Structure formats: C-alpha cells, structure tokens
Image 1 (cartoon, rainbow, N blue to C red):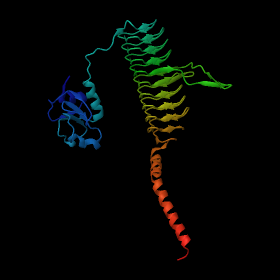
Image 2 (cartoon, rainbow, N blue to C red):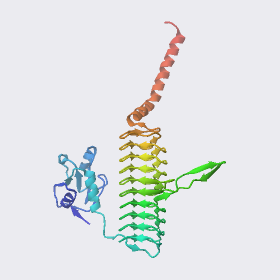
Image 3 (tube, rainbow, N blue to C red):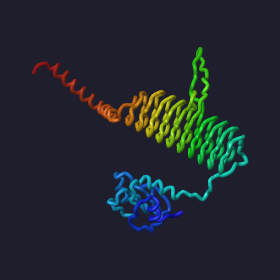
Image 4 (cartoon, one colour):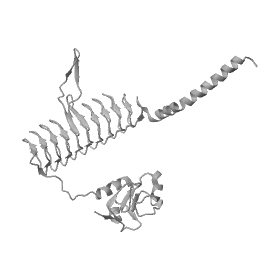
Amino acid sequence: MQRTLKELADLVGGRALGDGATVLLGVNGIDEAGPGEITFVANPRYASRIRTTKASAVIIADAALAPPIPAIVAADPSHAFMQVAAAFVDRSVPPRRGVHPTAVVGKAALGKDVGIGPHCVVEDGASIGDGTVLEAQVYVGRGARLGRECRLHAQSVVREECVLGDRVILQPGAVVGSDGFGYATVKGAHLKIPQTGIVVIEDDVELGANTTVDRARFGKTVIHRGAKLDNLVMVGHNVVIGEHCLIVAQVGISGSAKLGHHVVLGGQTGVAGHIEVGDGAVSTGQAGLAKSLPPGAVVSGTPARPRQRHMRGMGMLDRLPDELREIRRRIAELEKRLKAGPQ
C-alpha cells in the first residue's frame, strides 16, 4: 500500500511542500521513522528533530519551519497524522460477518451484517445491531442490547440487561455490568447486597483492555457519548461519566461519583465515592480526589490540591534537606559563640 504526498495532503485538507510525487509507504514517530515513512511535529519544541529524522516526509503546522524534506502543512498536525495513519491501514481483510459454527446464540435479535466469532455466547433476549462484530469468546448476557457497528474484542463481556449504543468498542477482557461492590456487615459477616441496576454506555465510547464497569445497585451506571477509557480502569456502581471524558490507565472511580463533560483523569487517579468533578476538570497522574472539584480545576497530589500549589509544595520538600542543614549549621555557630562568652 502506498500513497503520494499530494494524495495525503488532499486527504487531510493540507498543502504539500516540496515534491508532491514523493511515494510514502507508512507512518512512524519522528525518531523512529525511516525512508518511505511520513512523520509529524505538533509541538514546536520538537521542530529541531525535523533536521535529523530519516523520514521521507513530515506533517507540520507552519511552512516557516522550512523542512529539508517534503512536507504537508496542516492546521492540526496531530489530527492530520491520525487521518494519514488510517489511510495506511490494511483493509484487505473484510470484517467478520455471519455466525461461527462454534458460537452459541440463543433466541436473540441479530441485525444485518452481524459478525459473531468462535466460541461466543449470546443469551436469550439479547439484541445486536446492524454491523456489530463480536470477536472470539465474547459473552452477551440475557436481554443485553448492543447498538450498530460496535466492536467487541476477544473475551469481553456485556452482562444481562446492559445497553451499548452505536460504535462502542470494547477492547479484550473489558467487562460491562459486573456486580457492584456492595455488602452489609451483619454480626461480622459480609452479606451481599443485590445489584439490581444496569449499565448504559452511549455512542462512540471505547473501553480499554480489562476495564470494568459495575452495574448499578439500582438505576443505572452511565458512560455518556464519546468518553474514552484506557486499560485497567475500574468504574464503580452508579457512577456517571460525562461526554468526551478521557480516563487514563488504572484509574479507580468509586460508587456514585459524577464526572462532568471533558474531564481528564491522569493515570492511577483515585476518585472517592459520591463526589462531583466539574466540566473540564483535570487531575494529573496518581492524584487522590477526596472532595468535589469545580469546573476547569487542575489538580495534583493526594489529597488533590490546585496543581501550582502542589508543585510549590513539592519544590519546598526538595529544598527542605538543604535548608535543615543550613539551620543546623547556624545553630551550631550560635552555640559555639555562647559557650565562648563575650568577646
């Protein structure tokens, strides 16, 4: 598969600089790219690497960079690179269609062009929308509803009565609708509280590998449209995640927490139960959110506090050993003078 620079420039709505007939065979990062590959620079800090890359072409935002190799000028190089990368995807293998002979499909409603792979199980009362594909060993529970053009990768699970919108992607091992963590301690024993609710996942959501979304104790756990969850994320019962949130790996969101739209949670962030995170708020990696955050807040640390304040505090901690040594030195000098008496 190959594309010319001019073809790719037209694809992304950009402008070709240099030889538009340059033949390109794939994409790569600026440090890893070699001959025949196209790369990109989105951050001006990395512009100097254009001079050392071995790529045959580069996508840039500003023609003033005057790259020594052919280039595409695009308003958003990151987005343009994503489009270019998609153009090189090998689509020669058609998507799975039909039901594999080893699959077990109950009395379910299957839409047009559905694909059900080896050893899948689809229980009675489930419905699967047009063009949805279940790869090997996927489980769809009783009464679950899957929308159109979803892609459920190997060993992912959608338990009973849960709902997926259109174009939802579940990476391998993702589980939707596992029981919430609910127990009542009676005379020292932990008795299971029935988890009678469901999970609703709206359109264009993606769940990473081994991410789990607990069903509600009652009512719904909801992930609104466009949200993207990385690998190993845990979403507790009755959580609500707003539109277009980005949840990075190993985040844990406790029960009944509510996230507004476009919230970003860095890796290993912990979110306490029953708090609210305002629209557009950002937590950096390993932050601990114990209290609600207002819209637009940017926080770090545990317990989470405004990022600048956190960074100042960390800077003070770094300086503390030197400052303590200086204080001890001065105290030692004062003690020495006192012992020596008046001069």
